[in-house]
Image 1 (cartoon, rainbow, N blue to C red):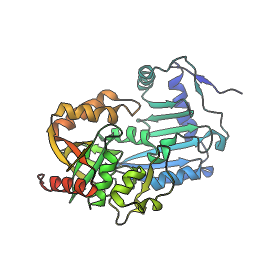
Image 2: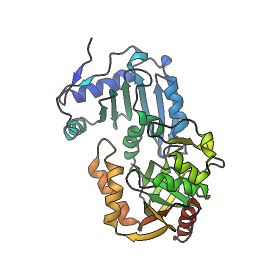
Image 3: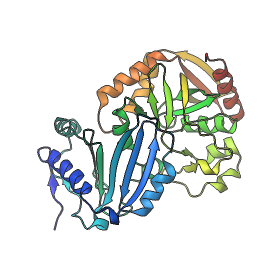
Length: 350
């Protein structure tokens, strides 16, 4: 039987049905993993134990706090639970705005990936979400490096935190955000900083809160870097510890492969840096306006996520107004990069 086809009109009902059918499944055939990140306690039920292990290994486990929200997720594949194949999108075009508006009117968040065919729905009211894929392993190539990303985005937003595409480096609890488009040097700068003794809450995604002052909290315990960047920061022999390259030709370096671990549970963010591969003789920091920083930070942090662009842009604007912002012109010397950032952080106010 061919899969059902969904359009904007039938979308909310399909999302509700998947969430409720998932909640009614017998738990005896599923695999429970309890995940704890900043502000969230998550009961995640998986149909595929391999996927459960991947998420447990790569998602940061940190103390969530006394007021943490309890979330239930069902990460399912149709083949394992004997369910119908995931629906296909039935309209000739995929209008993202109309998709989001239809779900928002029903009190839902959602996302659809055409290839592979992946549906993700989340109900803030019920604090429950479901992901449905065709069969074990039928997730996008990037899932291993950022598992459950959109669910963490939706759930964290309930408490005022934002998932952001930014790297971090810190020293003695103070830190900086590193932002910019792919290829700007965020990951290489992070790895250079770590090699120089700095800490991090992540080099790709983190949770940000504003409160009395911006703070960054970890989502994943993975660093990503290409072989050349690994060689520059850690030496040519280091890559032998990191396994195979991922779909982007990068190593996904788990915290367990680094000793001592550079990961911390929180950094108080004091500045926003925009790395730029400049092949400069020495790394240099130059002040930039909040507007320049906003144009670098917002696109990758807001538009990589499936909805809520307006509030994401507002958050990005508030963050860039709160923080001093700098362009970081990078040398090719990892020790110089680390030293430049360390001295800068040490000079920031407490």
